[in-house]
Length: 391
Ligand SMILES: [Zn+2]
Image (tube, rainbow, N blue to C red; front, side, top):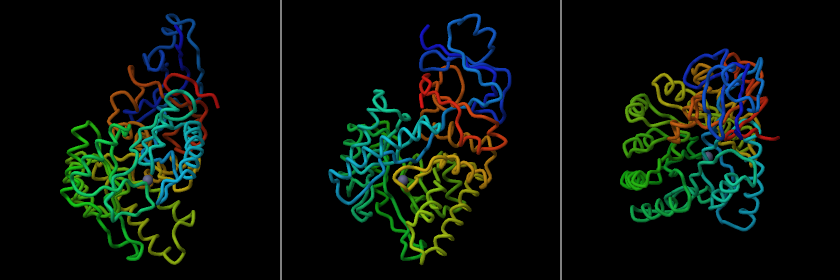
Protein backbone atom coordinates (compact mmCIF):
# COMPACT_ATOMS: atom_id res chain seq x y z
CA UNK A 1 0.00 0.00 0.00
CA UNK A 2 1.14 3.49 -0.78
CA UNK A 3 2.47 5.55 2.10
CA UNK A 4 3.55 2.65 4.30
CA UNK A 5 6.78 3.24 6.17
CA UNK A 6 8.64 1.29 8.83
CA UNK A 7 11.09 3.12 11.12
CA UNK A 8 13.36 0.70 12.89
CA UNK A 9 16.64 0.31 14.76
CA UNK A 10 16.44 3.43 16.94
CA UNK A 11 15.38 4.26 20.45
CA UNK A 12 11.89 5.71 20.89
CA UNK A 13 10.63 8.49 23.17
CA UNK A 14 6.91 7.78 23.19
CA UNK A 15 5.85 10.95 24.94
CA UNK A 16 4.13 9.64 28.04
CA UNK A 17 7.04 7.59 29.44
CA UNK A 18 10.12 9.13 31.08
CA UNK A 19 12.68 6.92 29.29
CA UNK A 20 13.66 5.78 25.83
CA UNK A 21 12.50 2.36 24.64
CA UNK A 22 14.65 -0.10 22.71
CA UNK A 23 13.85 -2.74 20.12
CA UNK A 24 10.63 -1.26 18.78
CA UNK A 25 9.65 -0.34 15.23
CA UNK A 26 7.03 2.15 14.12
CA UNK A 27 4.63 1.33 11.29
CA UNK A 28 3.18 4.35 9.47
CA UNK A 29 0.18 4.07 7.17
CA UNK A 30 -0.70 7.22 5.28
CA UNK A 31 -0.80 10.16 7.69
CA UNK A 32 -1.06 8.09 10.86
CA UNK A 33 0.99 5.87 13.13
CA UNK A 34 -0.56 2.43 12.58
CA UNK A 35 1.38 0.41 15.14
CA UNK A 36 4.38 0.29 17.44
CA UNK A 37 5.92 -3.16 17.79
CA UNK A 38 8.05 -5.81 16.13
CA UNK A 39 10.12 -4.99 13.04
CA UNK A 40 10.19 -8.67 11.92
CA UNK A 41 6.41 -8.81 11.92
CA UNK A 42 5.98 -5.58 9.92
CA UNK A 43 8.62 -6.54 7.37
CA UNK A 44 6.80 -9.82 6.79
CA UNK A 45 3.36 -8.23 6.44
CA UNK A 46 4.44 -5.08 4.58
CA UNK A 47 7.36 -6.10 2.35
CA UNK A 48 6.90 -3.08 0.06
CA UNK A 49 6.92 -0.48 2.84
CA UNK A 50 9.65 2.19 2.78
CA UNK A 51 12.22 1.35 5.44
CA UNK A 52 13.90 4.03 7.53
CA UNK A 53 16.96 2.92 9.50
CA UNK A 54 17.31 4.85 12.76
CA UNK A 55 20.22 2.86 14.23
CA UNK A 56 21.95 4.80 17.07
CA UNK A 57 19.30 7.52 16.80
CA UNK A 58 16.22 8.62 18.72
CA UNK A 59 12.72 8.83 17.29
CA UNK A 60 10.24 11.15 18.96
CA UNK A 61 7.20 13.24 18.10
CA UNK A 62 7.62 16.37 16.02
CA UNK A 63 8.06 19.48 18.15
CA UNK A 64 5.32 22.02 18.83
CA UNK A 65 6.12 25.68 19.44
CA UNK A 66 3.25 26.92 21.60
CA UNK A 67 3.89 30.61 20.95
CA UNK A 68 5.29 31.52 17.55
CA UNK A 69 4.03 34.34 15.34
CA UNK A 70 4.49 32.92 11.85
CA UNK A 71 3.42 36.20 10.23
CA UNK A 72 5.51 38.33 12.56
CA UNK A 73 5.36 42.04 11.69
CA UNK A 74 2.87 44.24 13.45
CA UNK A 75 2.10 47.93 13.31
CA UNK A 76 -0.51 50.55 14.13
CA UNK A 77 -1.89 50.51 10.58
CA UNK A 78 -2.54 47.51 8.36
CA UNK A 79 -0.71 48.70 5.24
CA UNK A 80 0.05 46.95 1.96
CA UNK A 81 3.70 46.90 2.98
CA UNK A 82 2.88 45.21 6.30
CA UNK A 83 0.84 42.50 4.60
CA UNK A 84 3.39 41.87 1.83
CA UNK A 85 6.27 41.83 4.27
CA UNK A 86 4.30 39.50 6.56
CA UNK A 87 3.65 37.09 3.70
CA UNK A 88 7.34 36.88 2.79
CA UNK A 89 8.32 36.43 6.44
CA UNK A 90 5.47 33.94 6.98
CA UNK A 91 6.73 31.75 4.15
CA UNK A 92 10.34 31.86 5.38
CA UNK A 93 9.39 31.34 9.02
CA UNK A 94 7.11 28.38 8.26
CA UNK A 95 9.81 26.65 6.22
CA UNK A 96 12.51 27.29 8.81
CA UNK A 97 10.29 26.00 11.65
CA UNK A 98 9.44 22.77 9.84
CA UNK A 99 13.06 22.13 8.83
CA UNK A 100 14.12 22.50 12.46
CA UNK A 101 11.71 19.76 13.54
CA UNK A 102 8.65 21.82 14.46
CA UNK A 103 5.67 20.05 12.93
CA UNK A 104 2.97 22.15 14.66
CA UNK A 105 2.78 25.77 15.73
CA UNK A 106 0.32 27.46 18.03
CA UNK A 107 0.24 30.92 16.47
CA UNK A 108 -0.83 33.56 19.02
CA UNK A 109 -1.62 36.37 16.66
CA UNK A 110 -1.28 38.37 13.49
CA UNK A 111 -2.35 41.97 12.99
CA UNK A 112 -4.50 40.99 9.99
CA UNK A 113 -6.11 37.92 8.45
CA UNK A 114 -2.96 36.96 6.45
CA UNK A 115 -2.11 34.13 8.83
CA UNK A 116 -5.21 32.22 7.68
CA UNK A 117 -3.99 32.41 4.07
CA UNK A 118 -0.51 31.20 5.08
CA UNK A 119 -2.08 28.34 7.03
CA UNK A 120 -4.20 27.30 4.04
CA UNK A 121 -1.17 27.46 1.70
CA UNK A 122 0.68 25.07 4.04
CA UNK A 123 -2.34 22.74 4.40
CA UNK A 124 -2.76 22.66 0.61
CA UNK A 125 0.93 21.79 0.15
CA UNK A 126 1.79 25.01 -1.71
CA UNK A 127 4.52 25.94 0.77
CA UNK A 128 6.40 23.82 3.35
CA UNK A 129 5.49 24.47 6.96
CA UNK A 130 4.16 23.06 10.20
CA UNK A 131 0.46 22.63 10.91
CA UNK A 132 -0.57 26.07 12.16
CA UNK A 133 -3.20 26.64 14.84
CA UNK A 134 -3.85 30.38 14.50
CA UNK A 135 -5.53 32.73 16.94
CA UNK A 136 -5.67 35.53 14.36
CA UNK A 137 -5.96 39.16 15.48
CA UNK A 138 -6.01 39.53 19.28
CA UNK A 139 -8.98 40.93 21.16
CA UNK A 140 -7.83 44.07 22.96
CA UNK A 141 -9.43 46.92 24.84
CA UNK A 142 -8.77 50.35 23.36
CA UNK A 143 -6.24 51.17 26.09
CA UNK A 144 -3.89 48.40 24.87
CA UNK A 145 -0.85 49.28 22.70
CA UNK A 146 -1.91 50.29 19.18
CA UNK A 147 1.13 48.71 17.51
CA UNK A 148 0.43 45.16 18.73
CA UNK A 149 -1.50 42.48 16.87
CA UNK A 150 -4.70 43.87 18.22
CA UNK A 151 -8.30 43.92 17.12
CA UNK A 152 -9.78 46.67 19.27
CA UNK A 153 -13.13 45.87 20.84
CA UNK A 154 -14.68 47.17 24.06
CA UNK A 155 -17.73 46.08 26.01
CA UNK A 156 -19.51 42.74 26.03
CA UNK A 157 -21.43 43.18 22.73
CA UNK A 158 -18.32 44.05 20.71
CA UNK A 159 -16.44 41.18 22.34
CA UNK A 160 -19.15 38.65 21.45
CA UNK A 161 -19.26 39.90 17.87
CA UNK A 162 -15.45 39.82 17.56
CA UNK A 163 -15.22 36.22 18.82
CA UNK A 164 -17.92 35.16 16.35
CA UNK A 165 -16.15 36.98 13.52
CA UNK A 166 -12.77 35.39 14.36
CA UNK A 167 -14.42 31.96 14.58
CA UNK A 168 -15.92 32.32 11.09
CA UNK A 169 -12.61 33.72 9.76
CA UNK A 170 -10.62 30.65 10.84
CA UNK A 171 -9.31 31.26 14.37
CA UNK A 172 -8.77 27.93 16.10
CA UNK A 173 -8.46 29.64 19.51
CA UNK A 174 -8.97 33.12 20.89
CA UNK A 175 -6.24 35.31 22.33
CA UNK A 176 -7.06 38.31 24.46
CA UNK A 177 -4.60 41.08 25.35
CA UNK A 178 -5.41 41.31 29.06
CA UNK A 179 -2.60 43.20 30.79
CA UNK A 180 0.89 44.61 30.54
CA UNK A 181 3.59 45.89 32.87
CA UNK A 182 4.59 49.51 32.29
CA UNK A 183 8.28 50.15 31.49
CA UNK A 184 7.94 53.55 33.27
CA UNK A 185 7.38 51.76 36.58
CA UNK A 186 10.41 49.53 35.99
CA UNK A 187 7.93 46.80 35.07
CA UNK A 188 6.45 46.81 38.58
CA UNK A 189 2.97 48.18 37.82
CA UNK A 190 0.48 46.49 35.54
CA UNK A 191 -2.37 47.91 33.48
CA UNK A 192 -5.39 45.72 32.80
CA UNK A 193 -7.23 46.37 29.53
CA UNK A 194 -10.45 44.45 30.24
CA UNK A 195 -12.89 44.25 33.17
CA UNK A 196 -13.88 40.98 34.81
CA UNK A 197 -17.24 41.15 33.03
CA UNK A 198 -15.57 41.51 29.63
CA UNK A 199 -13.19 38.61 30.36
CA UNK A 200 -16.10 36.41 31.44
CA UNK A 201 -17.96 37.14 28.19
CA UNK A 202 -14.86 36.44 26.06
CA UNK A 203 -14.69 32.98 27.68
CA UNK A 204 -18.44 32.32 27.49
CA UNK A 205 -18.65 33.20 23.79
CA UNK A 206 -15.44 31.34 22.83
CA UNK A 207 -16.40 28.20 24.71
CA UNK A 208 -19.90 28.20 23.22
CA UNK A 209 -18.21 28.04 19.78
CA UNK A 210 -15.81 25.31 20.93
CA UNK A 211 -12.76 27.62 21.02
CA UNK A 212 -10.17 27.77 23.78
CA UNK A 213 -9.14 31.11 25.22
CA UNK A 214 -5.75 32.37 26.29
CA UNK A 215 -4.26 35.79 26.68
CA UNK A 216 -1.25 38.02 26.84
CA UNK A 217 -1.25 38.29 30.60
CA UNK A 218 1.29 39.96 32.87
CA UNK A 219 0.95 40.27 36.63
CA UNK A 220 -0.77 38.30 39.37
CA UNK A 221 -4.02 40.30 39.48
CA UNK A 222 -4.71 39.71 35.79
CA UNK A 223 -3.81 36.00 36.08
CA UNK A 224 -6.30 35.74 38.95
CA UNK A 225 -8.98 37.50 36.92
CA UNK A 226 -8.62 35.26 33.85
CA UNK A 227 -8.40 32.11 35.96
CA UNK A 228 -11.69 33.12 37.57
CA UNK A 229 -13.16 33.88 34.13
CA UNK A 230 -12.29 30.36 32.90
CA UNK A 231 -9.38 31.02 30.54
CA UNK A 232 -7.73 27.82 29.30
CA UNK A 233 -4.19 29.16 29.21
CA UNK A 234 -1.89 32.03 30.08
CA UNK A 235 0.86 33.45 27.86
CA UNK A 236 3.89 35.03 29.65
CA UNK A 237 2.16 35.38 33.06
CA UNK A 238 4.83 37.17 35.10
CA UNK A 239 4.85 37.44 38.90
CA UNK A 240 2.22 34.79 39.71
CA UNK A 241 1.89 34.07 43.44
CA UNK A 242 1.45 30.65 45.06
CA UNK A 243 -2.33 30.77 45.73
CA UNK A 244 -2.93 31.78 42.09
CA UNK A 245 -0.67 28.96 40.81
CA UNK A 246 -2.62 26.51 43.01
CA UNK A 247 -5.88 27.86 41.59
CA UNK A 248 -4.51 27.40 38.04
CA UNK A 249 -3.80 23.73 38.83
CA UNK A 250 -7.28 23.29 40.33
CA UNK A 251 -8.97 24.82 37.29
CA UNK A 252 -6.61 23.18 34.77
CA UNK A 253 -5.29 26.48 33.40
CA UNK A 254 -2.22 25.85 31.23
CA UNK A 255 0.87 28.06 31.13
CA UNK A 256 3.13 29.16 28.24
CA UNK A 257 5.79 31.23 30.04
CA UNK A 258 7.95 32.13 26.97
CA UNK A 259 11.20 32.52 28.94
CA UNK A 260 13.30 33.13 25.80
CA UNK A 261 11.05 36.07 24.89
CA UNK A 262 12.33 38.28 27.70
CA UNK A 263 15.95 37.22 27.21
CA UNK A 264 15.94 37.83 23.47
CA UNK A 265 14.10 41.12 23.83
CA UNK A 266 17.02 42.29 25.92
CA UNK A 267 19.68 40.84 23.60
CA UNK A 268 18.08 42.19 20.43
CA UNK A 269 18.04 45.73 21.75
CA UNK A 270 14.29 46.02 22.31
CA UNK A 271 14.94 47.32 25.81
CA UNK A 272 16.82 50.57 26.36
CA UNK A 273 20.15 50.06 28.14
CA UNK A 274 18.93 52.48 30.85
CA UNK A 275 16.30 49.91 31.80
CA UNK A 276 18.63 46.88 31.88
CA UNK A 277 18.90 46.47 35.68
CA UNK A 278 15.12 46.63 36.13
CA UNK A 279 14.60 44.33 33.16
CA UNK A 280 17.05 41.79 34.60
CA UNK A 281 14.98 41.75 37.81
CA UNK A 282 11.91 41.10 35.67
CA UNK A 283 13.65 38.16 33.92
CA UNK A 284 14.82 36.71 37.26
CA UNK A 285 11.35 37.05 38.80
CA UNK A 286 9.80 35.37 35.79
CA UNK A 287 12.14 32.42 36.20
CA UNK A 288 11.17 32.20 39.88
CA UNK A 289 7.49 32.11 38.90
CA UNK A 290 8.20 29.26 36.48
CA UNK A 291 10.16 27.33 39.16
CA UNK A 292 7.13 27.59 41.50
CA UNK A 293 4.68 26.73 38.69
CA UNK A 294 6.59 23.53 37.89
CA UNK A 295 6.62 22.56 41.60
CA UNK A 296 2.89 23.31 41.88
CA UNK A 297 2.15 20.99 38.95
CA UNK A 298 0.88 23.57 36.43
CA UNK A 299 0.82 22.12 32.89
CA UNK A 300 3.52 24.08 31.04
CA UNK A 301 4.18 24.24 27.30
CA UNK A 302 7.28 25.60 25.59
CA UNK A 303 6.70 28.69 23.47
CA UNK A 304 9.34 31.05 22.13
CA UNK A 305 7.67 34.31 21.05
CA UNK A 306 10.91 35.17 19.35
CA UNK A 307 10.80 38.94 18.76
CA UNK A 308 12.89 39.07 15.58
CA UNK A 309 11.08 38.75 12.22
CA UNK A 310 12.47 35.27 11.58
CA UNK A 311 12.92 33.12 14.68
CA UNK A 312 16.43 32.07 15.49
CA UNK A 313 16.89 28.35 14.68
CA UNK A 314 17.04 26.38 17.90
CA UNK A 315 15.16 28.96 19.99
CA UNK A 316 12.53 26.36 20.95
CA UNK A 317 15.28 24.05 22.22
CA UNK A 318 16.69 26.97 24.26
CA UNK A 319 13.23 27.45 25.79
CA UNK A 320 13.16 23.73 26.71
CA UNK A 321 16.64 24.03 28.25
CA UNK A 322 15.48 27.06 30.27
CA UNK A 323 12.46 25.09 31.48
CA UNK A 324 14.78 22.28 32.60
CA UNK A 325 16.90 24.87 34.45
CA UNK A 326 13.67 25.85 36.24
CA UNK A 327 13.20 22.29 37.49
CA UNK A 328 11.75 20.14 34.71
CA UNK A 329 13.35 16.75 34.06
CA UNK A 330 14.53 16.18 30.47
CA UNK A 331 11.48 14.03 29.77
CA UNK A 332 9.21 16.80 31.07
CA UNK A 333 11.01 19.33 28.87
CA UNK A 334 10.47 17.05 25.86
CA UNK A 335 6.77 16.88 26.79
CA UNK A 336 6.60 20.68 27.10
CA UNK A 337 7.17 20.81 23.33
CA UNK A 338 5.10 17.74 22.42
CA UNK A 339 2.37 16.22 24.60
CA UNK A 340 1.81 19.25 26.88
CA UNK A 341 1.70 21.58 23.90
CA UNK A 342 -0.88 19.31 22.28
CA UNK A 343 -2.92 19.49 25.52
CA UNK A 344 -2.86 23.31 25.41
CA UNK A 345 -4.36 23.08 21.91
CA UNK A 346 -6.81 20.33 22.96
CA UNK A 347 -5.43 17.91 20.35
CA UNK A 348 -3.69 15.52 22.74
CA UNK A 349 -5.95 12.66 21.63
CA UNK A 350 -4.11 12.46 18.28
CA UNK A 351 -0.91 14.56 18.53
CA UNK A 352 2.12 14.44 20.82
CA UNK A 353 2.58 10.71 21.45
CA UNK A 354 3.91 7.76 19.49
CA UNK A 355 0.82 5.59 19.69
CA UNK A 356 -1.38 3.84 17.12
CA UNK A 357 -3.91 6.29 15.69
CA UNK A 358 -1.79 9.37 16.39
CA UNK A 359 -0.59 11.69 13.62
CA UNK A 360 2.68 10.53 12.06
CA UNK A 361 4.51 13.76 12.94
CA UNK A 362 7.96 12.51 13.91
CA UNK A 363 11.57 13.57 14.12
CA UNK A 364 14.74 11.51 14.20
CA UNK A 365 17.78 12.90 16.01
CA UNK A 366 21.36 11.78 16.50
CA UNK A 367 21.97 10.96 20.14
CA UNK A 368 19.83 10.87 23.26
CA UNK A 369 17.71 13.96 24.11
CA UNK A 370 17.06 12.62 27.62
CA UNK A 371 20.81 12.96 28.31
CA UNK A 372 21.23 16.22 26.41
CA UNK A 373 18.40 18.37 25.02
CA UNK A 374 20.88 20.13 22.72
CA UNK A 375 20.91 17.14 20.34
CA UNK A 376 17.51 18.46 19.18
CA UNK A 377 19.28 21.40 17.54
CA UNK A 378 20.43 19.07 14.78
CA UNK A 379 17.50 17.17 13.35
CA UNK A 380 18.28 14.21 11.09
CA UNK A 381 14.85 13.65 9.57
CA UNK A 382 11.42 15.27 9.82
CA UNK A 383 8.21 13.43 9.00
CA UNK A 384 4.97 15.43 8.83
CA UNK A 385 1.65 13.62 8.39
CA UNK A 386 3.52 10.51 7.27
CA UNK A 387 5.56 12.27 4.58
CA UNK A 388 9.33 12.74 4.77
CA UNK A 389 10.06 16.47 4.64
CA UNK A 390 12.46 17.16 1.78
CA UNK A 391 14.92 19.82 2.84
ZN1 LIG B 1 3.55 36.80 21.29
